[in-house]
Image 1 (cartoon, rainbow, N blue to C red):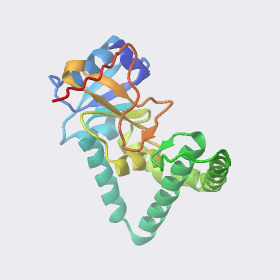
Image 2 (cartoon, helix red, strand yellow; image 1 turned 45 degrees about the vertical axis):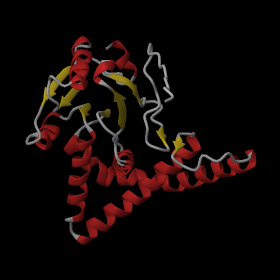
Image 3 (cartoon, rainbow, N blue to C red; image 1 turned 60 degrees about the vertical axis):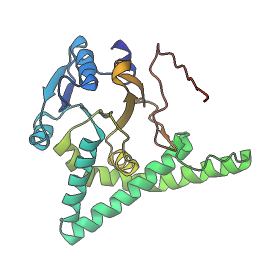
Length: 230
């Protein structure tokens, strides 16, 4: 349980929102971690999720990919039903922010979703320089979008520190969307038999792999791969 702090560096005063059943192994591990840290835990349901996000403004949301997909679909629906001008502005801002975050990942060395082919040093440097230039150009527009559009989304859903997703693979478009609007989502992996978390993306190194797998094991775990030939 203590090892979960590497994934979720929560502090006293933080608020967690969860809608998983308390007998779920993933939920139970999170509960033990939350209670041992003296952190506030709020429970909600599918019906009350939208209202409770706005009411409690949680720092962290603990849930499964389906919940983040539902939030994503709800935000997209709200944008699509907006007046034409607002819709155009919001979609334009989103495209810019998605591009900005992708180029930012490239020059920070956190983009593993691209071609894994090994390039020469000169090619890599030019790639880094190009990404840095484009990201610098897009950054002011991204900041404007955060102030005019994304701030309204944040006030509606909270999740000011991170969303913790586990129990399944998080769709790439959902992952990228929340990153673009400034909501950090960390995907984790585990099994009931592993109590239950064995790996997760870190808040300071939230690297997305080419196959969207989780590639950061938590500390004090030993992995043994066995292959049986028949």
